[in-house]
Structures are given as structure tokens and as C-alpha cells.
Length: 120
Picture 1 (spheres, one colour):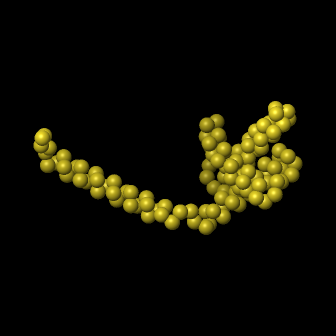
Picture 2 (tube, rainbow, N blue to C red):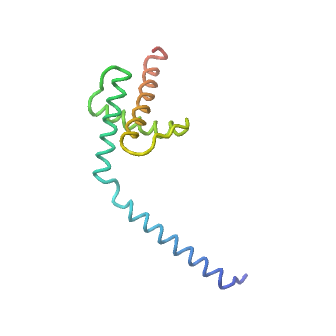
Picture 3 (tube, rainbow, N blue to C red):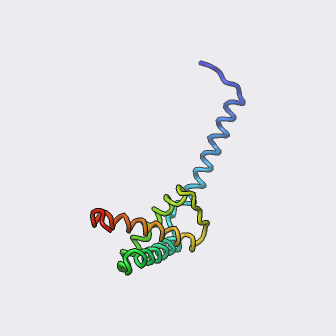
């Protein structure tokens, strides 16, 4: 068996302690899950973005639940697509609504193409 110097074992022990501490801090931060306020903001942004996208693409909204669903999925699409295109809107509620609306418009256009088999 190869013997290691004392400084080696002390470095490993310090690293283990640091990993355990950072893991416990992360766990305590996210242990309770999503807060009620965060959930309300997500639903509000989804509702506004879904309604705006419905107004732009179809000319009308789709109802409360459908607008929220379209807006939330649109926010996921927008948060993935926009940075890939080099577009960074910033932080806050208004940029979140803009990005979610763009993503929801893309979603509705894709769904329109899929259901009409390529016809606009």
C-alpha cells in the first residue's frame, strides 16, 4: 500500500467538509420547494403571455387555463430559443412576459402548421 503524506489526507478531509457544507446549504435553500409568491408570478406571466400570443396569432384568447398553459410552455420555449439566437432581454417581470410571449407565438405557429398540415 502506498503511504500518502499528511498534507494529502488533510486536503481530502477539507474538501469533503466543504462539499458536505455546500450540499447542506443548497438543500436547505430548495428544501421547501417553490414559494407561493413565485408560483403566482409564474402563473401571472403565463396568463399574460398566453393571452397576448392568442391575440396576435389567432385574434382571440383560448380561455384562462389554456392561456396559462400556452404562456408557461411559451416561456420555456422562449427561455431556450432567445439565448440561442443571441437575444438577451434582461431580468424582471416585463422581459419575462416578452420572452414568454415570443415563445408562445412560436408554439402557436408550430401548432397551427401541424394541425393544418402545412397550410397557413
